[in-house]
Amino acid sequence: MAILREAPILLLDEPTSGLDPAAIDDFNRLVRELAEAGRTILLVTHDVYGACHVADRIDLLHKGELVGTFDRPPGMDRIDTEAVHAAFATHAAA
Image (cartoon, rainbow, N blue to C red):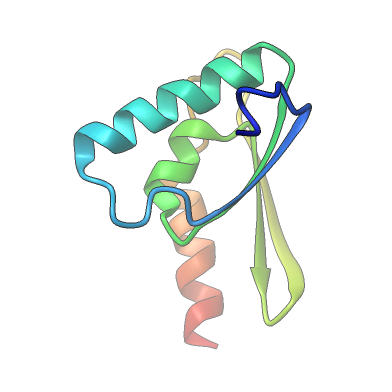
């Protein structure tokens, strides 16, 4: 409904949970198209790989505190998955 109503901001909580790989690809394409059209999308997910491919910015939270921020470099198509995963693993082990 939010997409149909052209809401300027979308808040999505684990939107790809339970989707098959083809549906996740479709979802990621839709999110990129909405972002390119000027919509703001806040997405909560544990899917580091998926987030790196769709996000312009990732903020990593641990126990409610911001412990890392990762931006998509200019000219690149995604955020560095290995850097985000390493930071996530470091804080998850703490």
